[in-house]
Image 1 (cartoon, helix red, strand yellow):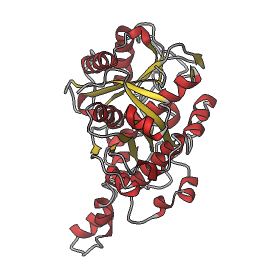
Image 2 (cartoon, one colour; image 1 turned 180 degrees about the vertical axis):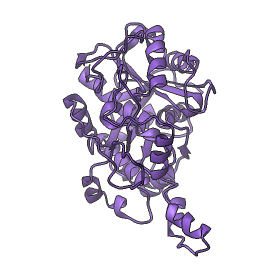
Image 3 (cartoon, one colour; image 1 turned 45 degrees about the horizontal axis):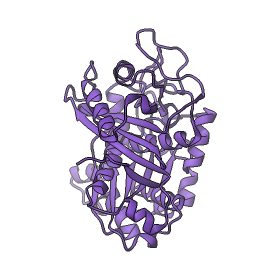
Length: 401
């Protein structure tokens, strides 16, 4: 399948993470550059060092009823909240979609599926634990929850492709519409902090005990985060029917796996190069048409090095940045959150500084922007590098492109 042509319309965006509970709040925080990652408050461990994370503001639990329900995961609740914001930005009530084939496509990683340790501990010691945690898990597939909450009648899929899941969900949703599988898709990613991921990344020894420093010479690793972002994608016919003026467009999508290592990217960036090439090809754009790149930029030694190598070769002269210094690494939600940030920055005509970068790595062939920077051009690219060697990229443009 291919997107091509004028791309696929995006009528609305939704986003929430540690930086804020809406697209506007998050973007304002990005440009302020103020951050405060702290040791996790909602999960406990016996680790000697409690590395900082970017947790969701507690105020979310007061404003989102679904987040307080015992039968639904926070991952699903965040997906619903951001989908609601995306529809509101488009000027639509959920009922307006009832006559259309609307799909739900959500990226996640563990999606908090493994936050049931007490259940397994009691079962393994011969107890008879309550089945509520299992029922909660079975009822909380984030794409299925979206379909149920908004009575969607199109295809439903949850993408679990490590840290590229959110990017893949956006790209695949555009392909669904281009292929005529549905009229609209609520697509994005959602992931909550979880003891399993927190302890797992600790065991990989890639945590930074301080606020993360993507692309910095003194980077030590990542900070985990949590959040969600959703985009409302429409066919042109559906946009006309609903009276929605496309605010943005998904022009291209590429995905490639180099299968080099369980966690590290191939040193020469072969997979990322292939994904970028496909994203540009399907968008019918030249590298010079890209205004900026929202890089994956986790703050880990290998990932940042590969991106700094590939980007100036694949997209010479194109500025890039990482927004994870403000959000932490939100895993399966990261690609969707960064796609939303890419769209918002295009609309503003500028990008924020790559937060955390204070000392350029002299071994890198390129480096991100270090200050608020004006951009020219109508298309931006957001990319994700995932465990297992998967690499994905989406090209997003302003709606009248």
